[in-house]
Length: 446
Image (cartoon, rainbow, N blue to C red; front, top):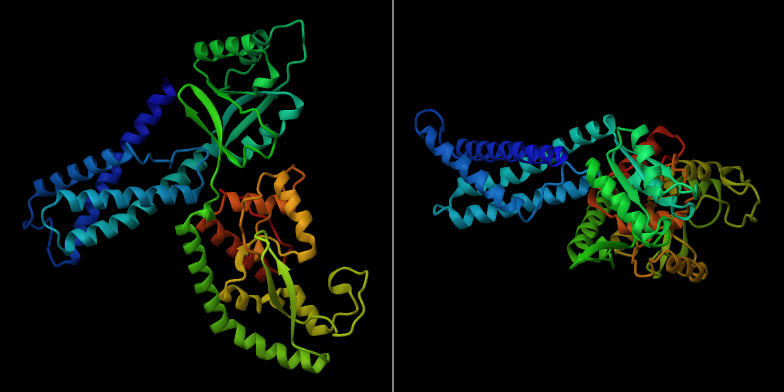
């Protein structure tokens, strides 16, 4: 009950603050329109009425679009999406209710659209810091086969500290073991339970204990390790079911956003950096090695479509294959080593991005004859429906992750969790890695 009351208090205070943001946005809109609000021209009660309108609009919209800024599991791109939906819905209500539709109202709604998104991001950042500083203590009851869920919950929940209990003592009832654990760890706030670890009667006993002590009980779905990443739980009547999750890039608006971002950034690179690097590369490659400046290779991505990938040539044209890795291969000429180390050899791939056969951030590029085994592994990860173009760069799991993850799993995770801000973070981190000339680092997405 304390937890619910605290959440209600946070939501109420947030509504009051966002209504104030609404009023300030219209005040600034009035100032930009030349109306000196607050200087005696507009009475105070007008702004108070406008504040009440904003509070009412936000309250109505919150019933359908909840504020997820205080969620321990919401990603920042999800927070931004919810804020944009809320601001857009409030703007529609304002246009429907207000009789005067003038420049002040349009400007005020646009300012509120930007201000609410920024305000939600600031609140979410503060909440994440608080959540990481004051972690949620929990316990998970599962067998060894479901132990992967402990790490998955920890990685996807801010500040969650989760201990695992495995029912090994047959002489002692599960309820008694839980009561003993809770007595020794009074800071526990939530209990996660895998149904396969206990009998039905024992699950009911644990649910009664959680209800009596005011703890949150979460029942984990019965599924293999990769299935919950492709499924979402929902309640149909009194029955909980797992339903397929639609990948974000199957949405037309998301695909359009990603494509427009690729076009804009690739044009920026091709019109600024690429001509200079291409001229230098043409001169140096021709002086140091005979042969073409560009190398073409047929590759494909997660979508299985074969395309022609272009890169600057970094090895001697007729050099034999070497067993040495990277730039230690004697087949590389000196400028080719520089292109390889700085990743500038990949600049021509922005032509493929502009053409539409690649994306700046996407899946790994593989050879066409490897796609059959690649697709077979996709089926094992319940990701055969994913359609992701090959990328110049791709997502990588955090280096600190204790899971034995593969690049394939990273591609699948990215296709299921795509977001505009995730793409921006990956690009900025790759750029920072190249500028610092350090070993490529993985992203910890918060």
